[in-house]
Image (cartoon, rainbow, N blue to C red):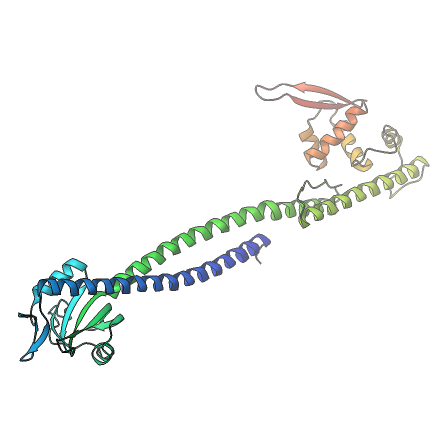
Amino acid sequence: MRSLKQQITLLVVGAIIVMTAGFMLAVFFQTRATALLAAETKAMSDLATVEALINLQYPGSWKVKDGVLFKGNVKINGNYALVDYVERLTGDSCTIFLNDVRVTTTVRDKHGNRAVGTRASSEVVQKVLGAGQEYVGEAYVVGRKYQTAYKPITDDSGKIIGMLYVGAPRAIYDTILYSSLKIMGLVAVVLTLAIGLGVWVFTQRTIIDPLQEIIAGTRQVVLGSPGLPVAVHSKNEIGELARAFNQMVEGMQALANELGKVVSFAQSEGHPSAGNAVTPTKRKEMERFPEELPKGLNRITLEQVVRFLERNKENGVSSDEVAGGVNLSKVTVRRYLDYLEQCGLLDIDQKYGSVGRPLKIYRIKT
């Protein structure tokens, strides 16, 4: 069975985990969308840069002669210097197509060879060569996913004769994305642990400790001790419970005082009570104190303290020894000793040790 503290902590930490997971999921999709938008923007910018670079370096129009692609008078088929320079400049892979066939490229196949002679994907061909539109987005290039940008190449008559391509491997952006998520996940774990620890401490101090004090006081009452007021200053339900418990203890102490009066009256009349005969010693002992004791004290406990002091009047005892002898708390015993001192029934000596405060030794007057 889990304790109340564990249940509250699990509830709060569980709620935090669910909220964190939802937040990270939302951030994932937002970050992914932002990363894709940034990648597409970069691809379009790099494509424009490549086109301007080609036009500057190779003036003239695009054309096809005998199945070979030219830019002006420069043969493009197998012109790897151009695409390699673009790759070094932008960091993107670069390809020039004759229709849908790669005639020069930096893209390599699984064997490490340039993928010259391979064809573009059908999705790209349909949009760029078929519809004459630019294509920006994810596309498979020789079996690998890239973030790409394609643009149709036209000759002087406006006929589409090929495509210009730049792209970056999708793995680069995935690495950036998942690295960000790992950092956020680590931060989330640390925050969850910190909040969980805070909830644990807060629950212990504001709920568990006061409840345990009330439970201890209740057990003390059940075992026959008069019980002590619970020092709980909370203004919440725990505080209300503590105040109700204190009121109960006060009521029981008042009832014990009334019962003590009844017993004292019966004994003073010479009648046995609960099998205990009235002796002169007991009558003399009870006549020391007024019938009405101060609030919080009861006669039965007072008599226990007095009898213990009388048994040890020769050497005297400390308040700690009295507490151990009558099985009461030190705070309770001090209240009774202070009352006996006020009544003038105690002699108090100071016992000095090598260090610390002097120890009070109590002896009851005979």
